[in-house]
Image 1 (tube, rainbow, N blue to C red):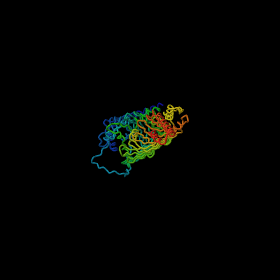
Image 2: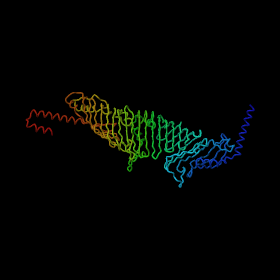
Image 3: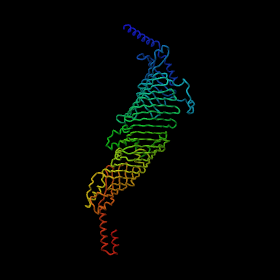
Image 4: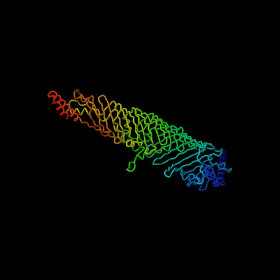
Length: 619
């Protein structure tokens, strides 16, 4: 044991003596010119080491320096500035005058991706014509990684693409490690702050650089992220993901394959391909077992039964919130000219899609965009016991954008639909609707101000809450005459087996050309209007009650054939009515008196006098 300890002590003394001799005999500043030369040779960037180099022995043999900068050819400002740099070197190669770097670490670095930090072309340099032809790189001349590890800690990236847009990416921690000559492993984490929101993310990936710079391929095996801040749910938006990414320089092409992403309680899977030609072409195919937009937009945190809160939230968080000014038309906000800048083919399906309280099954979206003419070929799903389809075309070649849609709703329960849209649920039944609508703009404001078109609406097992039309009529007649009984039906609603409406929409006002409702003892026809923005109505109805009068006599038989005029008006959640029974009874009494006089004249007057009496009665 004593001999072993003695041996270990001798080895330790030799190592310490060797390192001490190394520090004394080899000046790290002798490598300064070599380091600068190699960086210039490999990348074209100019490295400036502002402080002296010094040895650091424990826990790794390293060379330390103070502030450094790295500048692209002819750039106005450095692309990289770091507070200090550490080079971990191998010991044995130093003894044979070789400089092998195991790891480069930058701490407190500021990375600038800005126009002024990019390589600048010389004014007199000729510009080669663009070509899709690629010439192979001679063996051994391609870019190869000469450093085993590069590490960046606690750093900042300033990303600026133009004078008006700058993004600061903070708390960067980056590790690039060479696995072999053609593959590197990357670990990256950072935070991005903008508009009082923070995105924190980290990922690990393996990159294939065997065909660089023509091609790159990366497998992102682990991605974690969280977005929180103003305008987001209290718990934020977070999730994990993985993807296989490929890049090709010419023709420029990016693809994301085997994309798997979780977003809170939602999931997304699929592929995305981007052809980066003069006009980018996007091909997107995504699917989801469940996509809950309410959870992502904070909608599910609202009170379920507070219609006003849900309505206000939808307006406040709509895609477009035009500011109405006397000198600026809100139509100027509906500019979709960006659709002219690219072409796209989109396909998305979801087993369950949750939006504004609606659980939509078998949701499908298929759309194409060509030169600003976008066509939503399919936008459909199953909701509230029925099915809907909203094929739409968008003309973004003009400003404001114009939309043309043909909505189709089949057998949808109306009451939960009204609740989901934050509208008073005064009607219930199974809704059938088909229409042809067009207008400028694409949100609720546009629909209620600029859209127009035709609507055909059907409602099976219709029920109007808050107003019992048969009771109103029967009660009014029973108060005026004893020939009918008080109504037995005192429910607070009106029912009809089916109801149909033919209407025209024009800038928020719905003109009802024809309304028809039929039930066992009730026939209604009518016309009128409804205002979608003010949520009120004014309808003129003619109601025929074929039963429920409680008695059988000549007067009741006449009432069963009579079409009683009824005006229904007011706000949707507080309907009022106007019914003038006295005028009807007065007309009936007058007609009855005239008939009695005619009968008396027939029996008691001469034929030559009857015509004169008849003229008097008809005045």
